[in-house]
Length: 162
Image (cartoon, rainbow, N blue to C red; front, top):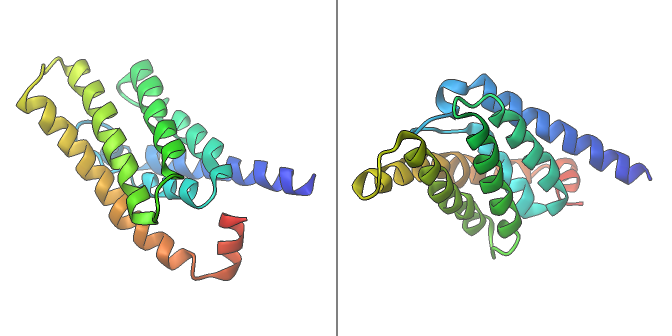
């Protein structure tokens, strides 16, 4: 019973931190060129899938502030959930970090291209590349380094992985 309450509370904290980081850094969190620093947190799902609800809800809450409205709430949150569910099959943290780079590059790239009606071709590939690059910086560089340092602490490691 206590473990369930702790897990619920930690998911609530994760959701809040993700949303606050994204909204607090909104000038770089939304749009065709975005680096959501909160996205480094998605690596929690690689280490323990029990953090998927908190990460998904955090993304949903953050996307409530999106200038792209309901479309971003649905597409962005779905992209995050798909990434989180697929990450657990990755053989290592760096490979896991590439899952949201690819998924968000495609999903959010298509969403932004559709919303701006840029069509297909070079413009679409460019938007996907910018989204993927921002995700790479947030997750594959910042996130992998952050978790490498974070998991050296045995207390934090236990919280994250148990």
